[in-house]
Amino acid sequence: MAQTAIKTRPRQIDFSHVLVIGAWGFAMVIASMLFLYVGHLIDEMLHTPPTFMLGLFFLGLLLCIGRLYKDAWDRIPKRKPCR
Image (cartoon, rainbow, N blue to C red):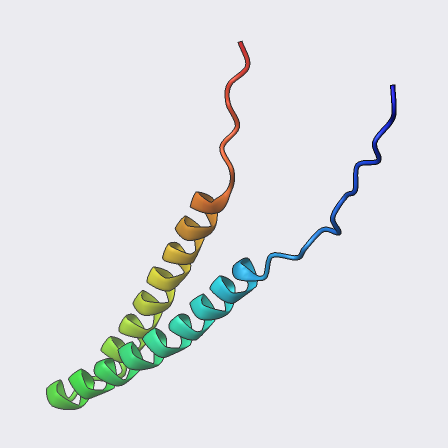
């Protein structure tokens, strides 16, 4: 019986996760700045201290972090239960 050599390919690095994290970082900055600006406009219209500005800023930040966490959690491969 002749033995055949099995060639192994070098492991390729998957950069899609890095791109997704970078896109989430970009979306987080854009959303938080947009919410900050809208809150500033609302505060100017109502002549209030910067409550809406800070509230909407943190709301946008928390929403983006929550979506990032959900996206990262969905990317984890699920293990099959052992019997």
